[in-house]
Image (cartoon, rainbow, N blue to C red):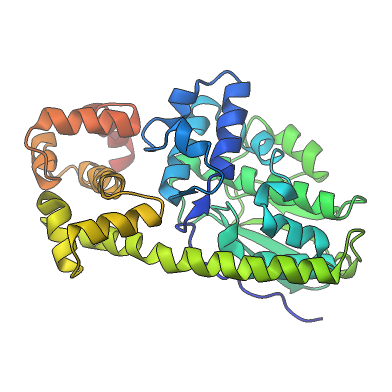
Length: 346
């Protein structure tokens, strides 16, 4: 039996449509979390979410996930069930029209950067079973469990829509410790999960791969895949500039130099850089904030620098401005962050 392909992307940092953020915000507000709280620190506005053609940066969606997980830490499983094949637009219609589960899985891995996943899926055949692993190694620890549960339950939900009889799992394991919601996970997935495992992994009988799908239509899937190719090529072409800017901003002193310095290093005008970032669904300020947040966490965690020194390293004229920004990112002050981390650093 032919092995399944590798996913086309190896990391979650790719631009994506705003449908997932809209879904998460709707889910959160339905559960009593204010929209403003869910969007805090993401740089996203309700107006941007109202535009169906808008792209969002993965870090923006991650911030919304972080806000939702902070408010509803055990809601990853339930949030995942809100994702349906139609949530993915033309990508989802390509699933529905596929001839078999195998074809749908191959298509999903081939155009994975049209999805909303954060834990990267890998599927392979082992002793007559399909082993599906969700790689969360690149995810921040505070949202890893939430996203693994969300992503796996979304996959399970969509496959159940493709094949109404369902695809029963034969085993299920998670890297995180056993949560208080273990019974809910067992009830939803139909198998008792193991916790503290080496990988987030689920298995099912490989014979299901070649089950014909009830809505299979070769003509429709051909049209949908052509549109997927066009869409993903345009997104991939625009993704590069955000990565380049992030890389430049990590250079010592680059944050303080600001947009003029980065534009100069990229051999383009400020106006051109601003336009390219706008086309990629982000902005210089958003990327600067992302890099500052990551560097602030790293520098504070080492304990080698004072809060004032970290502020200077990140290009702030005053420590108070850095403290205000850090509280917006993390919900706590730098001092409280250091105190909370201290026990883990001993």
